[in-house]
Length: 211
Image 1 (cartoon, one colour):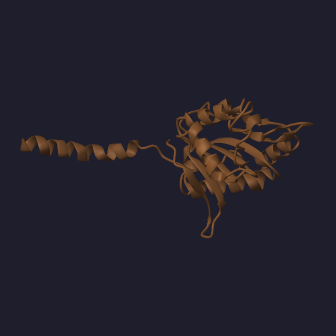
Image 2 (image 1 turned 90 degrees about the vertical axis):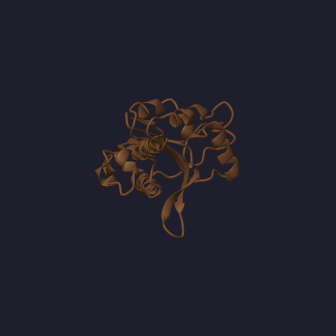
Image 3 (image 1 turned 60 degrees about the vertical axis):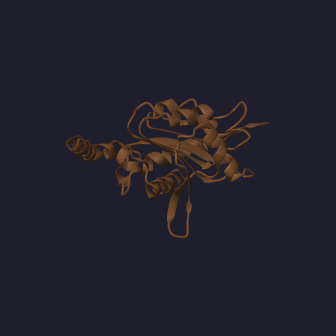
C-alpha cells in the first residue's frame, strides 16, 4: 500500500510539468497595447474602424519583437488609405474596414468585416487579434439583423491565441451591459479594453475567456 501511494505521488510529480506545459498561452496585455498603438499610428484612421489580424504566436507574447512583423509601416499605411476611401481591405492575414455611411443608415465596421473573418482564422495555432476602436454597439452589433454574433463565436472557436480588443465604449452604451452581452454570446472569448492607465498603457482584461 505504501509503495502504491508513493508511486502515485511520483506519477503526479512527473506529470505536473506536462500539465503545466499543456495550458494554452494567452496574449500579453502590454503586447496587445503595443499592437493597438501600432494600428493607431500606422493606419492613421480617424473615426471608428475595425481590424482583424493574424500574427505569429510569439508576436502576442511578452517582449514580442513587433518590428519583425510582416505588416510593416508601409503596408499598414496603404491599408489605412484603402479603408479611409471606403474600401474593405482583405488579405489572408489582415482585414480592415471603416464604417460606411449611407443616406438612411450606417454599415458598422465590425459588420463589414464579418464575411471575411474566415480568411484570418484559416490558419490555426497562431494569434488572432480583433480590434475595434469602439466596443460593439448594443443596439446593432450585438443585437438585431446586422449583428456580429457569428463573428464573435467564430473567433472564440479559433485554435490558438485570440482576443477581442476595444479602446472606447460605444457612445451611449453601458459598459457592464456590453460586457454581459459579449459574455452571453461568446463566454470563452478573451475581451480587453486597451487604454492609458496611470501606471502605463495596457489592455485590461474584462472577460477572461479561455484559449
